[in-house]
Image (cartoon, rainbow, N blue to C red; front, side):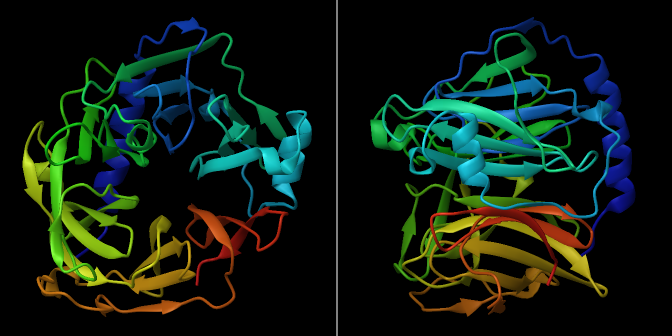
Length: 353
């Protein structure tokens, strides 16, 4: 297993060239929610609008920022955001946080309000920690609708659980209205139209059964034994290997469960990184803290096909990281975390463990 750094650089260069020619007209952006975020090429921010069943690409002009930071810390960020939006801290929800690799600007998806009338807001924190709102009144943008989104309100909120941009495509995890409602979509960018997603079936170790209705909660693209794959984590907490080559419209794909990380837990975010010549996964969880898993030789772990407790890919819990709600890679030596065990949340960088 290896990281294809040279290939990644070539893909990045090609992507930038493509992005420069994208026709993205300016105008008002209409979104009903802002959840999962992803960074794309040449200053593009992708926003997952689950309620509106669409992905929106915003030209936030991030590529023009040349400021780089070695660290970032914003204490009480939820309180600062609430003050900006003219409300109380308990009346906002921070839905996602992502870092631009080029500028180190941080983009934050926020809901102002907690009910059906919550207003989606996109914020940016620059290298100095200054917060500003991305105006959606007149911005270059492009969008694509998801025709197979679920219709029930509760499921509709999980139409999009996470986004990643890889090799000119936006990978979208979430739910659909198909027989296998757990879905992974691969949507080419620039957008034209979104085909149906691939339905995903997995073996859930702690439940002891095959499942097709639970969405992927968080995932990372990763190369395993020369094959491009998705490492996907589900609630209660299977870790599953899914070949990217099988993510074709309407295809029914059986993932390979390679770890069971414990029940009564929801994975929140994960990243992959290298340190001291080895590769690791760092995963934030709702009730089981931050896990550090080995990411070397993942092809060597036998598929889990029987009911089981914790088994498979080994991990350690990072005891010093408590209350982490969101996680993203900041640079080769550090991660960005949104964390806090009380009402006040901090956004800061930490050394990769």
